[in-house]
Amino acid sequence: MFPLADLEPAYDKAVWLYVYRDFSEDDRDRADERIALRFGFSSYPQHKLVDPHTLEIIGDTGRSVDRFLAAVNAATVKAPRTSDAHSSLVDAEERAIALEKKPTVRKAEAALGDTDIVVRLRGISFLAKEQPESIVERAEDLLAVPNDNLRYAVCEALATAGDESAARALDAIVEDPAGSLNPNVLRGRAVGALARCGDAKSIEVLAPHVDGSQFRNSTTRTVIATLVTLAERLDSKRVTKQVRDILAAGFPDPQEDEREQRMAVALAKTLHKALEDVTGRNVKFPSDYDAKARKKLVGAWD
Amino acid sequence: MRTRLFAAAAAVALAGVSFAGSETPPEGPPWVRSIVEAQKAALEREVPIFVYLTKTH
Image (cartoon, chains in turn orange, blue):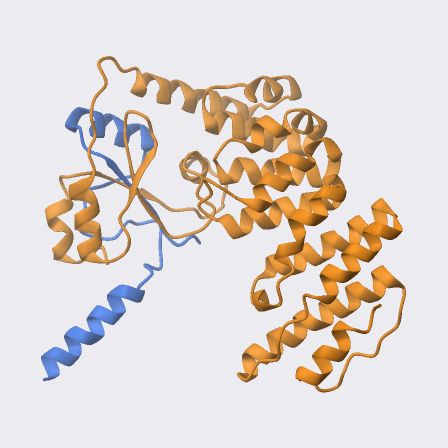
């Protein structure tokens, strides 16, 4: 895309910032990582237009020449009356680098309240390893920040050290991962954290995501695993029955395409195993997964 | 005819291309590598920053 002369009209209509991670963690890679963290990038490629005053994303150029030129032409940057945008960024970079080089729990905790998202993320990253409880205390506020990398880190901390006080905030992300550039991944992380932090209400939130048509989606498996864990942890007949019914209704339809059928059967086996774990029953998995076998499996757990 | 086929193939390739990514930016645009530098230039010129995160290593 980029070597094409067709994009030349846009060369002077934006400042072109190239970001490449090699994960060497040298100074160059750290700088590029900070850029990715700042804009919430957790997948590639990304091609965004950013307002230099606010450092907010104002557009996506896409990957076609026409769309690229249209996006750049439509982007407007308006200077506020006064701006300390540049000095703020320079200072923030210095704070983030200082935390990278010599982190301590005290500095990382202070960073959680920083005005800059990258500084906060450096703090969270350190605390996730050293003192995840500090993140758990602030989880609800942190999960409201529309930055994927920050929310992933919080979910990770909650998955290891959280409790039911985070259930509603996690439920909200499962229901609507608003502001995410990678909503399926964010939802999956929140679902994973609910295994430890979820309660009976969380089961209702998770139920729609045990969807047999979503056999290609890895998050479906995460939902199933979390429901099994919740059934075990909450340990009530009502919850067990509720989870059983949710899982049994999730068996996918058999597929005509061979590859799709393999994926559907894989999901069916995951559900089958989960139901055996939840109900304590042993049910034979059919050698041939067709409509008749599916119907029999659905009704085998009452 | 051959030219049309090539153009069609190129269009398909453009739609699906994902630049492999390397330490060296692709030729053409006036790339910068520092967000501090990018912001300074963008503020001076009152233009947006185009941030391109390529395929990683």
